[in-house]
Length: 283
Image (cartoon, rainbow, N blue to C red; front, side, top):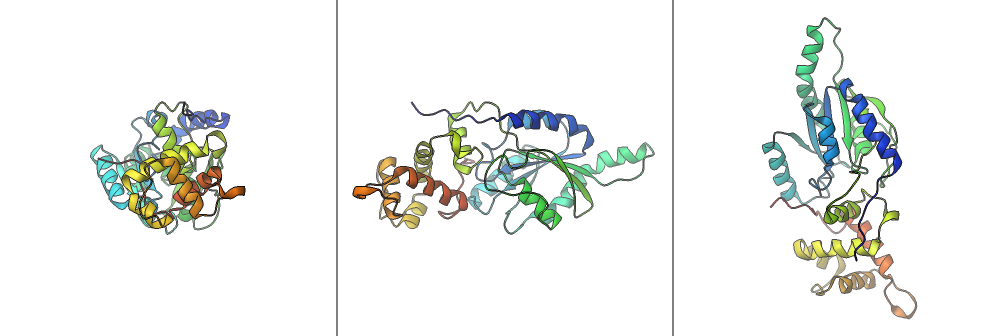
C-alpha cells in the first residue's frame, strides 16, 4: 500500500492562530502559490481565514513552471475574481508590480481609516502561503537586502515579523501553513515532490516514482533530453534505474542505488534542471 503523506508539525498550529489574530491589523493579504502546483499549493484553511479581506495571489517560481500552464492558471484565478501576479524569484521578474497592486487593493481600507480622522499610514500587508513557497525570498527582493533567512526546505520561518518594503508598504511575514489533513494523495505527492513537505517524512522512492509517472505522460521529451534516453521504459521503476545508471548512482556489483537515484531526480526537478514543468494542469 502506498504511503499516505501527512506533515503538520506543531508550529503550524501556532502559525494558523497567528494569522487569525493579526488579520484585522492588515489591509491586504498576499497569498503565495507555487506556480508549478497552483491548485495543490493552495491551502483551503488560508482561504477560509482570509474571508472577504482584499488579497493578491502571487504565483511564485514561475521560472521553474511551464509558461503555458502559468498563463492559463493566471487566467483561471482572475476569472475567479482574484488579482494575480506572476513572479520569477531569482530574477525578480514581475515583482516590481507588487507594491502598486497591493496599494490599489488597500485603497478602500485606507480611505476608511482617513475618514475617521486618523493620520495617514502606509498600507499593511500580510504574506501567507504553504512552507517553502518562497516567502522569504520574495520579501528579501522587495527590501533589497537579506533581512530574512532563506532555505530550500520547509519550516524556516517560525514566527511573524514586520518588514518595511520599498513603495512605503509595511509587510507582516507569517510562517508557512500546510493543510492539517491532505485528503487527496496526489496532492500530497505533488507537495512532497516540490519540497513543501520535509523529505524526512515520506518515502523518496515512492514520490520519485509518482513524479516520473507525471513527467512521462506530460514531459517525456524533457526526460529523454536530460538523461540522454532514446525512449522511456514502460515501467517507472525501470526509468528510475535508467536515470540512476546515467548519473552513476551505483552500488557494488553495478546495481543501481534507487534511493540515491530518487534523491537525484527530486533535486534536479526542484532546481529546474530537467526543464520548466508544472504538475497541476489547468485543462
